[in-house]
Amino acid sequence: MVFSKLTAEQSQPTRQRMEKSTAIIGFAWRKLFSLGLCSFGMLSVAGDFSLSNSALAAEKVTKLPAVPVPKDNPLTDAKVSLGKQLYFDGRLSANDQLSCATCHDPAKGYSNGEAFAVGTEGKAGGRNTPTVINTAYQDFQFWDGRAKTLEDQALGPIQNPIEMNMPLEKLIPKLNAIAGYKKQFQEVFGTDVTPDGIAKAIAAYERTVISTDAPYDKFVAGNKEALSESAQRGMKLFFGKANCSACHSGPNFTDNAFHNIGYGDGSDIGRAEVSKLAGDKGSFKTPTLREVARSAPYMHEGGLATLEAVVEHYNKGGTPNEFLDEEVTPLNLTADEMADLVKFMVEGLSSESYPAHTAPVLP
Ligand code: HEC
Ligand code: HEC
Image (cartoon, rainbow, N blue to C red; front, side):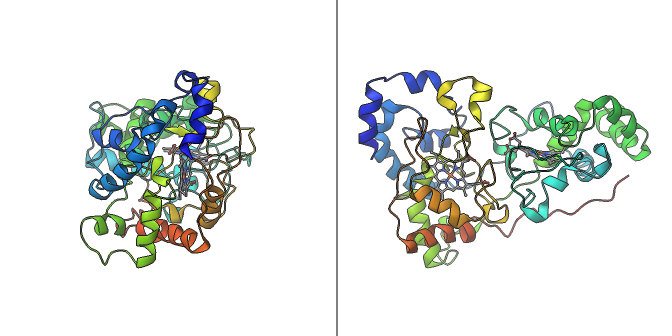
């Protein structure tokens, strides 16, 4: 399957390299998983070998490393507690109703259960709400990766007119007038409420929204009872015939890169908006699959209601288009195999350590 594509690419061997975003590879384990599996046409020859290597490696390297924390925003209990209050506080929005948690709701997989999110003005944005779980491990934020860090991301939705619709010039005096916030900002940052402090506190809280140690991890660590037979078959498909781990790789089940999987009506050009590279048209960030069973509906347009529908999408090889990723091809899975694959995601990647946070007392 990879070879038939190769011929087309050999005629313009550098197109993909020149015009497509590639993963920024930070850790050795990511290298293991992404080598030959992503955007470099020339490396596809090695693709089939890497696949079996990655299947092997995946069964060894599963544990998420310690949460990466930027030097200028160390995690402290007081800061995380402040960030959690801000995350759950509707007063950060124009109508006092909409908090981060309204759209990224812990009870709904840190998403909102809807195809699109609706802001304070009742207007819907054009993209599905991604989960906040394990975003601490991502190299990019947003479906198109336009923010790199959680700090960079946090002030966006507050000010966005179709989200919380709260200009910073209004928000800062509003929060400074709440004695409990003013006091905590002094304690944590040594200043009154500032945009920088808000971003840092919220980001610090998000770094505690982590899911790991799922049945899959337990299974790989040696507990062969941790997964049902069906989920085990699904796991083999995931890392093998179904080729999911070509992109959903490494311990966070994402390669931190962008791909066109042939989904969507084409109106949203995704990563190309940010990178300005034609080859990125219709490419979106590979989402984590940890806790994915909780955050339906799926994909950047939220158009796939169930994991079954997601697997059917991949089984038919997505919708053909000029920029379809070469790793997305018809899979010829049987109905039983598709059910096993879903079982692996539902059973294997849902953890008992799910961060089931509830709203804190607000100042
Ligand atoms: C009205 C609903 C809504 C609200 C309120 C909201 N978000 Fe979002 N959030 C979204 C949507 C939709 C996206 C995806 C937008 C895109 O990719 O262009 C998103 C993206 C994100 C991402 C990137 C996740 C990823 O994997 O790419 C993070 C992190 C995030 N939001 C955190 C927050 C925080 C923190 C707040 C509060 C300050 C907040 N959001 C408020 C809907 C919302
Ligand atoms: C070529 C890379 C690639 C391959 C191969 C791939 N995925 Fe994806 N996956 C992505 C990207 C990119 C998205 C987001 C696409 C979008 O929204 O348009 C995604 C989205 C998803 C989602 C939706 C998650 C959410 O939060 O909305 C699920 C579930 C999923 N993939 C499962 C799978 C399974 C199962 C397989 C194997 C059958 C697979 N993927 C193969 C890259 C890939």
